[in-house]
Each structure stands twice: as C-alpha cells, then as structure tokens.
Length: 277
Image (cartoon, rainbow, N blue to C red):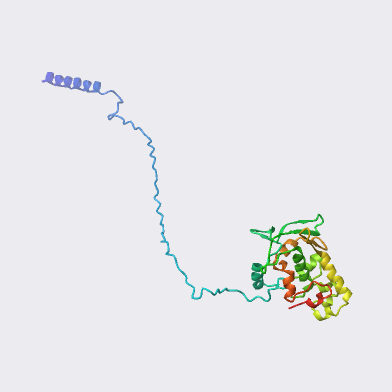
C-alpha cells in the first residue's frame, strides 16, 4: 500500500514539472494588438447652381399717331414772347423764337460752354491787352428777305442795341464792357438820373447826345472793304464772347429795321428810340 502511494505522488510531480516547463515565467496570457493610424484626405468640390430669371418683353407693335389737325402745332411754354426784337428781348419765350430766326457772330460749342464756334463770323482775334476783338464776317449770307449780310449790318445791330438801351432790356450786359464797370445803361453816360426816362433823355443837351452816339460808333467799327467788325472795349472782359453769343447779339438787316420803324442810324435821332417798351 505504501509503495502505491509513493508511485502516485511521483507521477503527479512529473506532470507538474512538465506544465511549468511549457509556460515560460512572466509571459502574457493573451497576445498584444498593434494599432496603426492612417490619415485620409478627402477633397470635396462644391458646385453651386445659379438660376437667373430672364424677363423677355415682346417688341411692341409700331404705334401710328394721327393728328386731328395736321396743319396745327401745339407747343407747351411758360408764356408768350414779350418782344421779338433781339436787342430788347430778355426772357426765354422770346429767345426760343429769336434764336431760331436770327444768328449771332459766334455760338457755344456743343458740350463745352467755355468754347465757341463760328457762325456769322468765320474767325476772330483778340488783342494782347484783351480790349480789342476783331471778327471776320462770313460772305454770301442772306437774310430771309434776300438782302445780303454786310459788316455794316453787324455794327449797326450792336450800336442800335446799346443806344436803344432802357432798364427793361439786356443791354447792360454790353454797356459795362464797352463803357466801364458800373455803366448799366447808355443814359448813364449823360446823366444817371435819366436812366429809364425817355422824355428826359430827349430833352438833354444835343451836344451830349451827339457825343454819346459817336462814342458808341467808335466802339463798334465796320470795315466793309476788309469784311471785318472791330469791338473796342473799355477794359478786358472775360465773358465778352459768351455775352454776344446770346440772343441780344443777333445780327439784323439794317435796311429792314429802318424800313420797319427802327433807329435810322443818325446820331441826331437816337434819343427818340431810347427806352422802347
């Protein structure tokens, strides 16, 4: 019996040693896992859809306008012309007509109010001191009645305007450059108190009246042989060209004006035409 017990114990020890030999000391019971990180870059293209709304308007059919009275033209305006005398007119209703009937020596250049283009004058020159303007008058121009334009017509038109004067006219725009700053009417050259007083002016000293008229004629001189008109100013006047380009710078037919009751060109009679209304 004792022998069997020792045999069993020996067998158990043999088996135990075999187990310990197969399992190394300190080894993990489960294997480690290796983690590998990988970065993936994803590029995404964004496509935006734009929707435009287009409105298509059909081309309208042509409209035919038939006037009930094709022989009559109706014009909307702020008022009626007060006068059609270029030397006296000082409002826009009359100017609209005058500028479509008469012409000036020069006119404003389109798009540039500081530049001018020739009209009844072909060219002009200004003296170095800025006090003398000489215009060459265009040849071959005829008035509506068939009379031919001459330098005399140009000079007469400006002379008549100045002598006709009056507080209701635009002539003060010309008396200052011709006769000095502060001269607002031709009557000022005789007596400022006579401004706007036709009867008083006519009763003034005849010699003074004659002298003033001659002063006007000396300031505006026509040369029919060389086809020029020369303006002599009292001082340089920057806006002179812009002034004579307006309606009151219109050139009239001297013979026609005289036949229709205007100043006859005689220095002995000009006071009778002063301050007309």
